[in-house]
Image (spheres, rainbow, N blue to C red):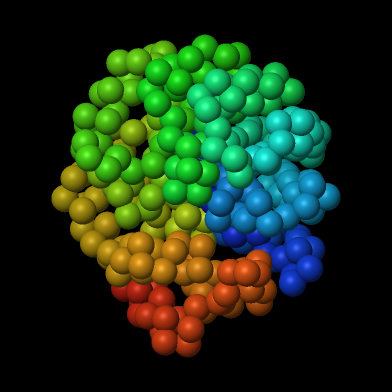
Length: 298
């Protein structure tokens, strides 16, 4: 399977209250992904709290992940930063530290124009020879890529894929058709937003960029494999087991929920970076109930 296809699993990046990455804890999470044989690992994405880590800690996390995975699974590393020159530096750091590909969101405080985003991606894509995936995450960046901008970016060497948000008005089939009509045939289209990705895959998306896959790779892969063999009924059956978790993701935020789940599973003992707070005891109990619903898939 090619890079930017299948299940791309995005783990959290455990760190102490000072933002010092727990590389042993990170490796424990990554080994779960390796054993399950996910198709790629998405390090330092939104779930990996890249925006809360310094350059030094991001490089430590990448070096640790590359050493832990040992080249067995492709490693996609997020390099988003407010400044273009900082993102270029992070891209070069990731390449030196063992990344196989890059993921870039147009992080900004001041709202960006399309030309500013284009020039940002042009610079970062040219900083290394690694393939780069566009991270279209308007919920966080407050920038939405137009199809025409994606088509323009797709002509830049090294830019090979896009990670899309779930469509709001049109369905997946219409969204994918619109994108594929505008983008090169070999340009890969994946989606994030775990609760919609079963339908995205059934509609022909190339990849599922998955929060839950970074923590529970076995049930996530069962869903992907059901899609790959064309078993719609099995896909829907598996997705039904996830529904309580999807509900909590939408209500409480997937980052908070996945930290709570990792604690419940005794995989980490660190909290999310402040100012994000751990879930209340009541909500943690709700996460535990949602995890129990997934036990038949483990």
